[in-house]
Each structure stands twice: as structure tokens, then as C-alpha cells.
Image (cartoon, rainbow, N blue to C red):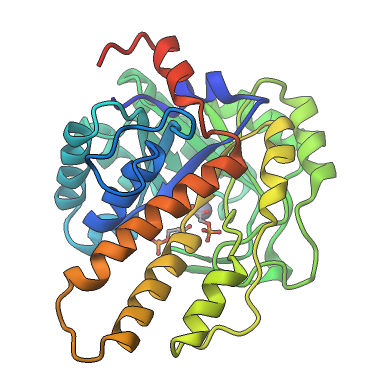
Length: 330
Ligand code: G3H
Ligand code: 13P
Ligand code: ZN
């Protein structure tokens, strides 16, 4: 069942964070749905209520053009049929104004992110407001961004020196003037596998300050991958070269959620799982060339990874309550 991120945030706010996972292909979609339903062995396994979680599927502009946006949409529609118990939002990640309108008009997305954070304050508000007006007319909700994360996102590289934390007073004005439904805030994280170049971690004081001025308003944390050492070691042990990686401490997801961080964006970690499984498979099976060989263990590993992540976010075990709150009958 596709719902809006707002529907999910109403249940989660202040208690847990909803995982927002980027996907690009069929195998990721399969692992994602299975992991969120606790079907760790196969799609036919019974749903495990103790770990089942609501979730957000994120589609970046890069993912939309990797094959064709309609291919990924069709995969997700297929997953919705295969897994009718799932409750999830379909969200455009880091949209331009043009991409937002395309998604709003598609009739498929329930949520879009307009990322005009590189514009000045007033222009960011003006662009966001236009998108909010178009989206709300169709019942679609909007995430906006204020502040500047470091790292690589889509085709933009922001070095740490130019990254800047979100100003709490500006956040209040931004939300009031733009009418956005949730706000991505810069609180110390960055995109990719090499976070915290300056050695710092999450800025809890900043999250708290923003949360106090915007009570009951969902905040979004981008760049939330934990870049697990286990997966990086497996990649490096199978021929990879990824020295000096760093990510967010997973134990900090829940404390951040209690302060209002209701959506936690994770892409890089999923890529690490993919890379480790495929590297190891072909290292250990040099004569193999069948894509289903690594595809199967990848889907299993990704499902387990998602279930683990949801445990850290506190969303594991929340699906039944979300479904009954939404009056779901399937
Ligand atoms: O924030 C960026 C996301 O990780 C999406 O990455 O644009 O390479 O799909 P992508
Ligand atoms: P990571 O690079 O930490 O996975 O962040 C992903 C993200 O913020 C997508 O919008
Ligand atoms: Zn992001």
C-alpha cells in the first residue's frame, strides 16, 4: 500500500525514524520489500510481525535515468502486488523543480523532495513554495532542504569547508513561508562513504535546537549511512580499495529520532552490501558468469541488512500499528 511520508511520520514522530532507502534495480527492490517484512529467506516466507516496518522508497534522478524511470516504477508496482502487506511511500530524492513536477504529474509518487538548498534563502523558499502548491493540489507531500551537507549528491560535490549547518531560526521561517511538510537539515552528516572528515559526529545540540523551535515537525537526516566496517573490510578483502571510510554511528539514530529526526536516508550502505557480495562471489567463483549467482545472495544480504537497520531506527515491529492506524484491510 503506497501512502505519503506524512502518513508515516504522524505515527513515527518523536518515537522512531522511518528508513528511506534508495533503490535502482530489481534485486534491490526485492531485498528491500523482503527485509521490511522480515521475509529473510524468500519472498514466500511468512511475514515476521516482530520486525516488519513501514518504509520509504527513494528514487534519485540518477536512478530514474539509470534505465528508464518507467522501468523502476514498474518494478515497484510489481513489488506492491507481490507484497500486499507492505506500507511504504514512494519519494523523489533530491529533486529539481522540473523533476518534482514530472513526479507530481506521474500519479505514482506520493512524496517529492525539492532540493534548492544551493540557492540563496529567499530563492530556496520561492522554488519550494511553487512545488508545494503544485504537489498539495494532488495530495502529494513535499520535503525541502535548508543548509548544506558535505559530500557528493547527484552531480554536485560540496567540500566540507562549504558545508554549513542549518540555522534554527531560519528553519522556522523557511517552514512557515514555504509550506513544506518536512525539512532536511544539515546536522553534521554528508553523503557517501567518507563522512566526518573533520572527525566530528552528529550535532545533537543543533538537532535539539531546531526540534524545539519546530515541535511536531518532521526533520530529515540525509547522509545517514553508517558505512559498516564489516562491509568495507569484505570489499577490501575481495580486491576493493576503500581506505579511510567513516559513517554515522547507528546507535545515534534513535536518540536523533527522539529529537524529531523522523526520516533517515540510507543509500551508500546498500551499495556497500551490493559491492561486497558481488566482489566475493566472483573472487570465489572465477569461472562463473551467471548474474543470478551473486544476485540471489545479494537479495538475501540486502534483506537482512534492511531488517538490521530498521532495528536500529526503531521502525522494526511498527508495521502492524501503522496498518491499523491507516485502516488497512489487505
Ligand atoms: O543523495 C544522493 C543519493 O545517495 C542518490 O545517489 O544520485 O547517485 O543515485 P545517486
Ligand atoms: P548516504 O550517502 O549516507 O547513504 O546518504 C543517502 C542520502 O542522503 C540520499 O538522499
Ligand atoms: Zn541526500
